[in-house]
Amino acid sequence: MSFVARFALWSDEQRDAAQRVARLIEEQNLEVVRISFPDQHGLLRGKTLMAADVGDALANGCTITSSLFAKDTANRTVFPLWTPGGGFGIKEFEGAGDVLMLPDPSTFRILPWSQGTGWLLADVYLADGRPVPFATRQLYRAALARLATAGYDYIAGLEVEFHVFKSETTRMAPEDSGQPGRPPQVSILTLGYQYLSELRADQLEPVLEILRRDIVKLGLRLRSVECEYGPSQCEFTFHAASGLEAADTMVLFRSAVKQVCRRHGLHATFMCRPHLPNVMSSGWHLHQSLTDRKTGANAFMPERQGEALSAAGRHFLGGLLRHARAAAVFTTPTLNGYKRYRPHSLAPDRAIWGQDNRGVMIRVIGGQGDGATRLENRVGEPAANPYLYMASQVLAGLDGMAHRLDPGPSADAPYDTKAELLPRSLAEAAAALRQDAFFREALGAEFIDYLLTIKDAEVARFQAEVTDWEQREYFEMF
Image (cartoon, rainbow, N blue to C red; front, top):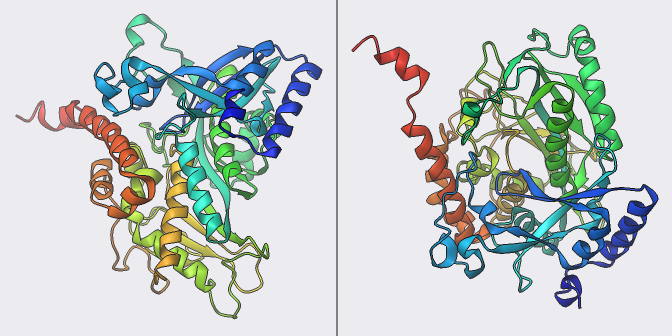
């Protein structure tokens, strides 16, 4: 029996999709198919298979080294792979042993920018059919299953800011390599500070057209393309989607934008605040709501005029606020992302909500009779792992509904309202998660300890570096 059949890993829809994949590979004369999985950072890692070998990979998976789960953002290994259990307490991870990438046939795409190339997103399993406990797509799927048991489906819309620069030097000399290597030297495409300006949008149009066309050809449900506030900054928004689709869209979108830009002499970055003069921070605003599985109705839409949300919506919101500090590692997982949390900056600095207010953490949009009533979480950075970002929202919201948490009154003065402050650094966020019993139970102690080990390693590397600020501050003075 195949690996899929032996462990009953596919739905009827996935079995039908696998047949369509085989047919499309033949009809489109594809030469290769990229099979990749989203790692702990939400980045895609995988292999490229010859088209003739994809059928076997769909049935039995494709081996890949487990050491990929041991990497921090600099691709440094932070777990002792050569010890018993590989530092994870998992026999299969010893000595960088293999795990299996099993392609999800429902995710199949043909890449418009790479001739004769298909793409499949994969889940990662151990040889005995168990999901790898650190595989974030499976963790998010488990959170969605808990939500479905409660009678709801999760709907998410993406509003993603990022920068596109012109690459000036590739910096490919051997001395430029490293962990990490030197970043590219870039120049800006627009002067910025003309938010939603028609002139700036037209100036960016030649680049945005390239991205827009390939994103649409990829089958991602693009809604709008916008010129953002800062130099060389733009924003893409996507139509709302349910469950895994929204997170899969974000992963493929980021990867696609970076690949397409590179092929055109450009550098795209989803880093929150690049270290460049006059730059503006980028955020990822996550629009979210629930639908009732029995009726299909928006569960956040209030029944009475004058109310911002239904009771379910208010309790879900209460959960997001209650767990905001501990969830910061999921919504803002990089050291750089915390440079964005500052008052009077269209970014939040404390755990509050407001009705159609862009200074709060959670902006409530809609009302009675509005089927698009939703919560816009403005706390996330565009580098966040979408599976962890969304899983944290689902789980925190469910906890709010279970305990009927009250979010309190709307904050009309977001930077003056007394409320719990968001973490000021990744180290502070990691400490909040470490002390939080809720996420340790909801996502499992094994995963929380794993993720914190990686984040602690990143913080330690940063603290060991001598920064430009320190050199300027002390080198001449003392």
